[in-house]
Image: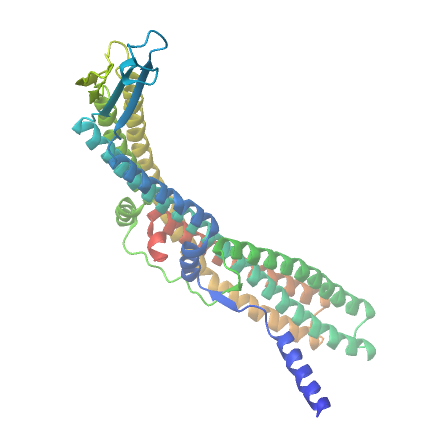
Length: 417
């Protein structure tokens, strides 16, 4: 009985040891963007900037606190008759309760500036998302390219390995020379070395993608993702979409509004802030009450420096807005032209791909039948591999253009929703 229990326990432990430590999630481009939006560690850190700016609104709404002060003068000698030093007849006390007066327009503009800066922080976070989505999309594509290159080399190596096995038999029967066998073996060895490098590149790109996604589980990409286009219309229509969707333009507009509000706030601070309060002043047991008022006399400091600074910031924001509008126009035009060009290149490559496949099959058949030389076959194999690599390079260029157009139009943020 003990032997049976030990056997079952050992079998269970063996099965558990063979289970994967973590699940593997397969990511389409859209799912990768959505995951990065939720779990990217850098983006999580930057999200606190929004909360910090929101906290400034609470601070702006707070009113100045009351100020309570006390002054006490103690007579050190020549006390009043029949009194000790601690008697109230030998002491003067001043209690003052005062409050800074915040002018209504100062409070109004201070709150408005905080609200506008909160809006700027939100738009800035959205722009950080857009930049992150471009990085994630490019890395997703790097993984796709590395995986396709690895798979292509494995297919090519498999083809050559089968030929090596055939040539080994043919060489034993003296149908071919030893040199021909060595040449096919050499090509197979070259492919194996390339596969090792390609595997390392693929593994590295997967790790980089995993870092951007901010996930703990192992990741894989969906190689069947066809990148169905979501664009409609011509370049002018895409430009209008970009002007509506681009978060950097929204950020520039928000910064422009915030800078204008800050100009008004700084001008309001030119008016000095009065301090008013009440006084209770017992002097040698004689009670006095009164009031106090104080105000800065703005002979020199009327907040001129901050007013001028805010005006320059406003001008800078206006210039930045114009620059971004010009940048968007150029980026959309170039991204759209590149996308259309790469789309045509991809359509035209399909026929070339089929031709290279047919040529390799024909030359391989002819070589095995003795109708051509090993040189012709190796050349056909090289041409087939180059054509396949060229095709995947074209697909890669098309998808890069697709992602860049998503980024240029601002639609990449919508794709991540």
